[in-house]
Image 1 (cartoon, protein in one colour):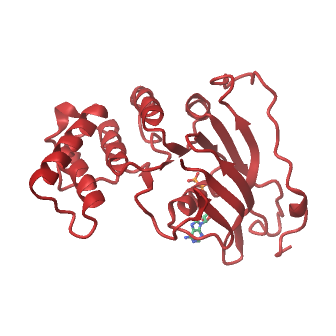
Image 2 (cartoon, rainbow, N blue to C red):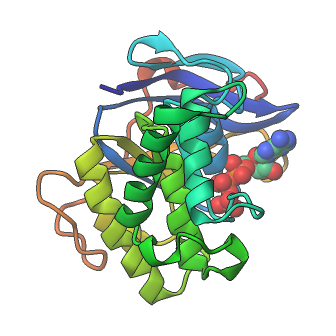
Image 3 (cartoon, helix red, strand yellow):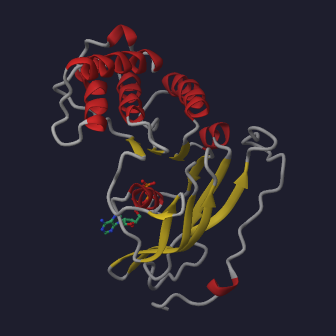
Length: 268
Ligand SMILES: Nc1ncnc2c1ncn2[C@@H]1O[C@H](COP(=O)(O)OP(=O)(O)OP(=O)(O)O)[C@@H](O)[C@H]1O
């Protein structure tokens, strides 16, 4: 179970309101695609779920408990830029994730525990399609292979929630399609909740069971920092399967702001 509840969350950097009054529940096992214009606060939202940032107002809970204000093993993350250890080969990169999970202070295992961790790391390396490349260092991998490795590292800790920040943004269309074919069965098999930021609408609709579109519904040209982004569309993609990107088969429904929210921001 990994229900995420976001209660009236605001994020402000000084006078700049980035996100205003975000309220939503994400059911366990959902695959949520997040889209929106550049700079509207999508990564900020993801960093709050990860625990790297604290909302300035409001609360976020995971399975009913307040989210710890630091990243934890229950939340894995993959960024657009590869974040693997360059001095370790593929197998070692995944093995160290298992070692950190089981021995958080020293990241060292011995004897049968080490043997079991190596076997699990090998299986995960195979599962993401890197079996033939297990002894290679990241510098000898293609972009798609490095992202497969980053995904394997994130999965090693069996996160309840996998956060993906434009994970396939730097990949060519063919490799991107291969990554889609990788991530969807992994998500289904592991029963994780996935939240994925993307600028690719086809990817958002094709992978997600739910789509959240962030944008600023109000803009003050004299003070662009006065208003933040909200969720302006919240689409359930789960019932009818993927929706064609061109010519929506169902009307898109804009979110109504909650009643208590129909007021000016405190900076107005
Ligand atoms: N640590 C920070 N300090 C101050 N401002 C920040 C900080 N992090 C983000 N911002 C600002 O918050 C706003 C939202 O940034 P964010 O990276 O969340 O946007 P985004 O929607 O993910 O953009 P993109 O699609 O281009 O990646 C931007 O105006 C950015 O400058």
